[in-house]
Length: 243
Image 1 (tube, rainbow, N blue to C red):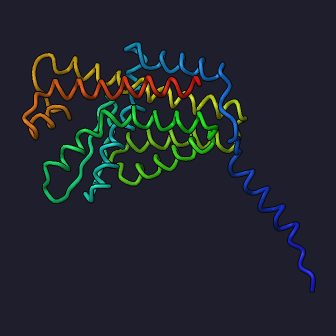
Image 2 (image 1 turned 60 degrees about the horizontal axis):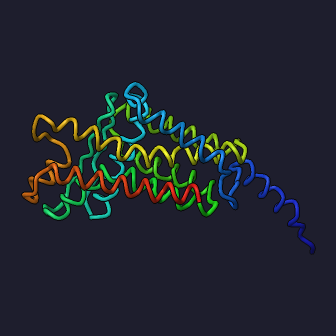
Image 3 (image 1 turned 120 degrees about the vertical axis):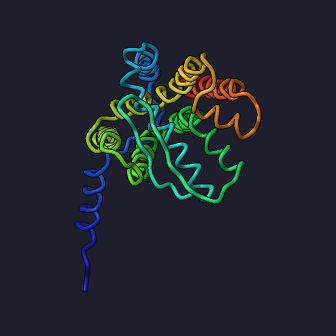
């Protein structure tokens, strides 16, 4: 008895192509990299655009807290994202100064580190993979979001990326992936500058001050450390994207 598998293979291929438009294999054209970099700078630098675009930075910031807490064996019982671009991550586990320090340190460094990882993927031509990993990360964060605004924010962001994966051209996917990468690389140092301004009047309830309480090292030193990580990731990410 002969079994015809050709039609089945064709149907599976068609289904795959319908689900995701894969454009991996080549790095984004330089003009897309440059234009999306300028667009990301325009979204991050002015205060009036940062009031809205800063929500993307908050997603990465709180996602960093949640991820490190989870990797350290903590139970992440909730993440809250608020309309003023602030956020909160709640986790529970065995008391440990080292673990608490690492979880606190993960917030302000997460956008820059994630941006650097995305830049490395894009420089190797993995455009679709970068967007797919973005969706996976947002889906994981969605599981622990505990407020309506946070749910709306994460779902909307993931929806835009999924739409690009399903129907966008290679150029559009590349532009979106590059913009998100540039945004993360730039928003890391930008959020640290905001933290520095907030602390001008003294210690606060920030991650830097939590680390100061754990270590006895002044919070200003940790703010400088956050900034150093952000700048180094920005320089290296820029080199990868423009190479």
